[in-house]
Structures are given as C-alpha cells and as structure tokens.
Length: 145
Image (cartoon, rainbow, N blue to C red):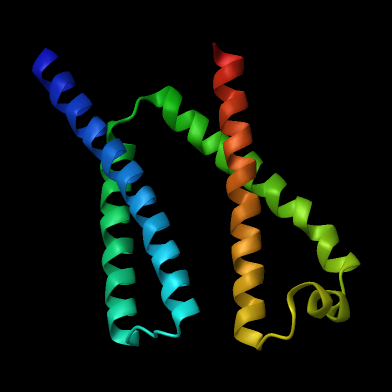
C-alpha cells in the first residue's frame, strides 16, 4: 500500500512539473512568436500546426495522469471551481456584448479581419473563465483550511 502511494505521489509530482514547465515554455513560445511577427518572419503553417497538435496531445496526456492521481478533495475543488468560476467568468463578459458595438471595438483595437475578431472573443472568454476558476479554486481551499 505504501509503495503504491509513493508511486502515485511521484507521478503526480511529475505531472505538476510538466504542466508548470509547459506553461512557462508556452509563454516563451508566445513571446518568440510575437517577436518574429514584429520582425516580419512568418513560420510555415504545417510547422505551427504540428507543434500545436503535439502540445495539445502532451498536455491532455499529462492532465489525465494528474487527474487520476489527485485525491477526492482536489477533484471536488477543481470541479466546483470550474463550474462556478468558469460560469461566473463567462457571465461577467455577457454585458460587454450588449454594451460594446462594432464602432467601439474598431476604435479600441483598430480594423481587423473577422478571424481576428473571433480569436479575440475566444481568448477573452477563455481568459475570463480561467480567472473565475482561479479565484473560486483559491477561495475553495482558503475556506477548507
């Protein structure tokens, strides 16, 4: 029993390190991509697609390892935080769709093509959900302590 717990803790620790490392690596990749774009260098689409697909598969695999190895309290915290925090973050953006019209968006961000507007909306929604998740997750653990 004790050996099983030790292996489980080791796998969970490795999964956490990989998740943290990939987050940091993603930040560097994003910064490098922005620098290349500023210099006028365009990476080949198959290279970007392949790297993105590889990252998604790796992160999904590590997330499964992490989820299988956390205890019930941590699972409950993640589930509760994603439901309430993600929903709250999404609902917090709802008034923006009503209050901001196309002219205001163009004035704030400049003229963009439809794909860039869709990407901006997607990233804004995902960011709001992740911020809500993080706040509710931290609140869950502070309340439980």
